Length: 192
Image (cartoon, rainbow, N blue to C red):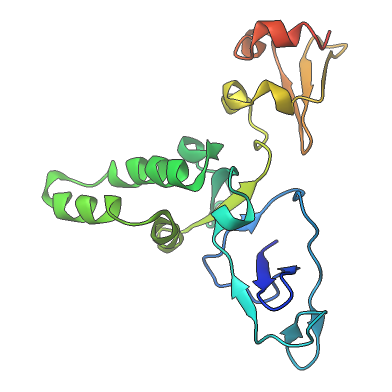
């Protein structure tokens, strides 16, 4: 899902014609998003025109979002940038990954890449074959259980197989007792 905004009525709309490098939104949003209507073009349902529709920066949509990169070729996710909090943090992690294969002769290129804005780094990632995804909650991943803030945990329980289930708003993570030690132990006792 992609979002744009009507600058006439201030409505957020599901974008039917996003640019190719637009950030995909995964999961629910903390505000209402309307559907565009089709009237010879996709238009704002309130204003009946596309004249005021604009693309939004990811940070305007969700200022404190979690980000991950999807590999457009394999459909997998790039582990080195999964659940980066904030667009600037994601851009830094992606550039560290992307520049790690460049040789010493490419130092000028590396400096130019690090000088880019986070929005420009999205374009670099797109050209490298990745799509950026964002969510208001952490993405499901056993590897990044330590990055989940305790306040996002809705409930936890132990399965018959001895696995611990951690339920968030947008996913449930199955893990082991060793993995759960990454989460603040005082808060865990409140769930059992």
